[in-house]
Length: 234
Image (cartoon, rainbow, N blue to C red; front, side, top):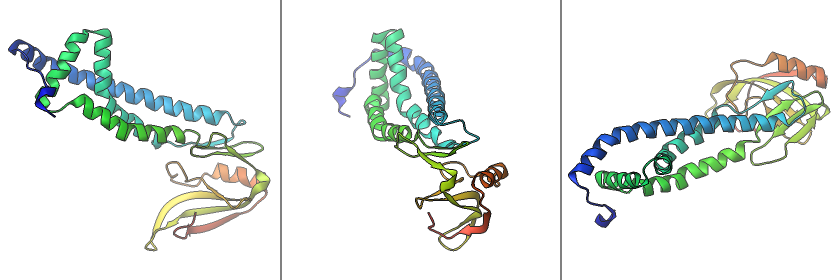
């Protein structure tokens, strides 16, 4: 950054801000953590609320770990901006702005500018992708299954008569022909698509026998058991 981006401060101001930086650091940690938890629970609630719009579900499959990404990166990128804004709003605006200028001079770069660029380049794309993932879910009701897809506001519904096959697989084949354990129930649908219990969520450690029994009752189909799907099978 050019030298004229920074200001000169008296010894008194520098000493005061040097002591204050530890409190600002603690505030950054607190604000970033609160932002992370609040945004995580908001995303989690939104995904479950969208899934609840389906008919009453006997079984519900939802993404689990996806909602951590934006809260984590958003907390890192936005903690400084939010902390300074709160300081200006509820504290002494002049001191807050002077502290920002002192901090820029101490670090040798404009932290606000850098973090804003990071917010635009990192947090914003992740946030948009996360919002578009909110509709993803699968619910099994009395009449059929409802599947929500990425960036698709209206879910897709299949009646149980549209299920053509029920396959139980212990895992899948890797590119080199090896075996990767990932138990899953795979449904072959009438439109040529497949639904897997392992998609868009953390893999199960074992087959959900309750769901398997439920599907047999609803479809009248027998299960097909295989070790693994070939590599590249969608």
